[in-house]
Length: 394
Ligand SMILES: Nc1ncnc2c1ncn2[C@@H]1O[C@H](COP(=O)(O)OP(=O)(O)OP(=O)(O)O)[C@@H](O)[C@H]1O
Ligand SMILES: O=C(O)[C@H](O)COP(=O)(O)O
Image 1 (tube, rainbow, N blue to C red):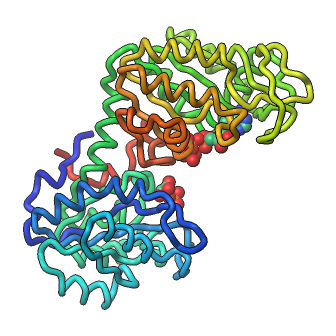
Image 2 (image 1 turned 45 degrees about the horizontal axis):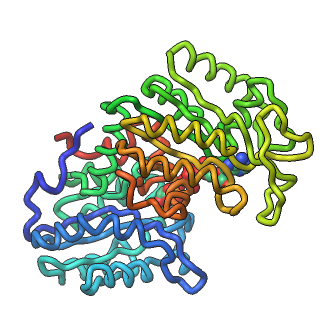
Image 3 (image 1 turned 180 degrees about the vertical axis):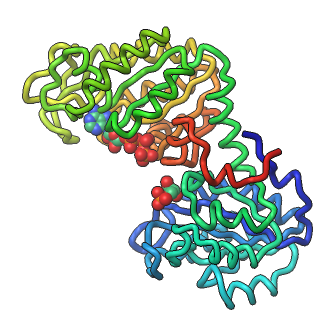
């Protein structure tokens, strides 16, 4: 799945429309509270400005449902981007029509312009051809650097590529190389760790990974359904009763394929998911009827860490417990530290998992933290993302 990138084309003097994913969290006052995704797009923007392109950035923010909504305007993003670039970023109040056209006409090589939220137009999410053409009319070249939105077949992520030479930015390239490299060509042993709340979100990911990994570690809320499939009583734990049969099948499939499947052997349980709860550690066969499992226990964490340290490639999606609450964070932090110390190629996906790695203080020690939530999950399912498929093959 190799795609052409901005290195492969001449951008000098050209108007380059760059789809970025500036869908970032903001506070009530409209300040960007986490600029990770803006920083992640800087290498592409800097390369283009240094190579004298006219850089026209497009993004969505939130889900304004096809209408102008002041809460989802991109002005705070333009301010933050200007600070990070150390140069002014012109922001216009629409993404198509007269105002953007006039602003683009005024640009000189090396300038950066940010268009308004593309989702203020209902045509964006419908991947409307006319709307895609109107976006394309602003530019000579299209660059997709929005990996986080590459699983959406929208006008600015896919449709526009029909009308312009379409290549990947550096973030898109890195995401494809790191996630794709781990999946397609991993150094072995290859270990995948899945956690988070629910099995149902990640069934296709499990199925795809079972054909690729040497070891699959399952923790977090989703482990409860697997433990129930093994016959344990999970008390009041979060559990998907309708997925227990499927979990049994997946356990059998792992065995049939020679994949080592590791589930927790002990759990941190409490009467409620409460930061002031008085938790205790129990073996998996001793969850009290009125209690719930909220973290992977210390013995499990040690077993998981031992397996991770033997690995050469590790993919991780989904925390091992309710890490947002201190009494239930130890399992997740232990796994994060094991990745940091493993010496393996470590690829982390998912918004909550990325937050957990940062909270554990080891974000800088991962090989790659994906900027995609849904996009990284769909990638791990083995799907070709529409935003990637639309780009020219290398
Ligand atoms: N044992 C558990 N019981 C209940 N909830 C749990 C348990 N273990 C983990 N969780 C919850 O799972 C959530 C994270 O799961 P999710 O699958 O959404 O992760 P992610 O894929 O990294 O994040 P995102 O979906 O935001 O990209 C966390 O909020 C965490 O509290
Ligand atoms: O944050 C994300 O996952 C992406 O920006 C996509 O947003 P969406 O789920 O609203 O399409």
